[in-house]
Length: 170
Image (cartoon, rainbow, N blue to C red; front, side, top):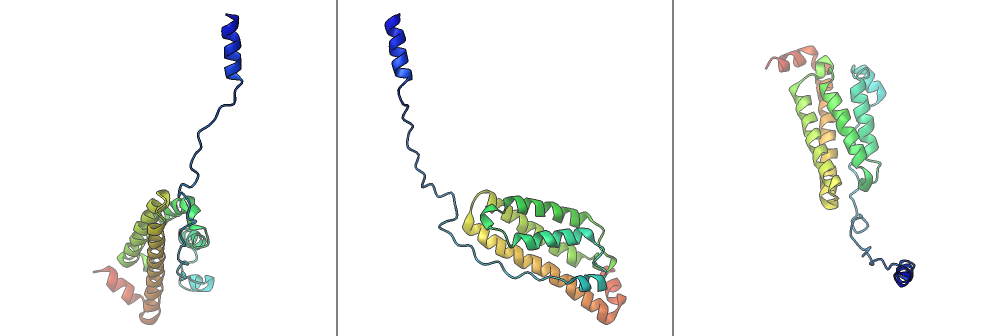
């Protein structure tokens, strides 16, 4: 019994050799360079006030979050993409200003939502090349959304509310 105790004590005091883990797993973006983000279109505060968009807090929260997304390291943007998805969902359920409550605007917002979901998928799965492409498409769809809001406001400013009323009756 004493011999078994001594042998057990000797073996328990030996250094355990851990297997060497290959640390060169390609789990980072070191090998990949993301494209610079496309410049986002924006609306000044004066423009939003003049066109009755300023008092739409869901829109402001969404655009602020979106502009922040372009400044982040794409490798670590999953949390921000998910937060932006929540803001977009809140925006799409919000009460749109009367002149912007149009299928044109809502459909472009749906495209942004689709591109955001695609970006989340690629970010979550660390598909960096695909994430780069989907982020560029996301920025383009966002710009399309913003530019359509601007063009509708320009049409209304040029032609009055008849444009808005005639397009919503179709």
